[in-house]
Image (cartoon, helix red, strand yellow):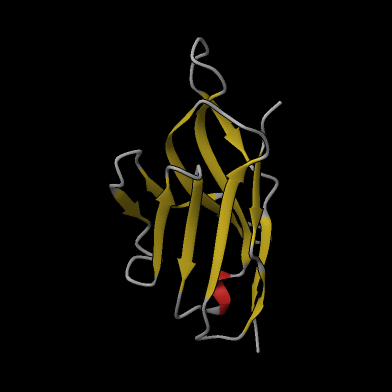
Length: 121
């Protein structure tokens, strides 16, 4: 069963940058919309931003201007470039995508396991 794999998390100082990557665990047929979410300790999961298959993006107010989402459709990979990081950006970051595993299947929503980003001095 296909899963999404995130990597790139870690510890970074306030004001620093980090880039996350998300890609399917196995070969797939196609990916539609993709997105990044995050869940801070004691809080609900929230949307960070989304990217459509054609490349259009949308962001939460809290990250707009600091974070940028991009994707490589040839590699079925999505990126989250994070800059000017703040302690309140500390969270587990999850990727999400609508995936078709074959030409005859429908799009199905798939989540990754998450990668921890800690912003601290």
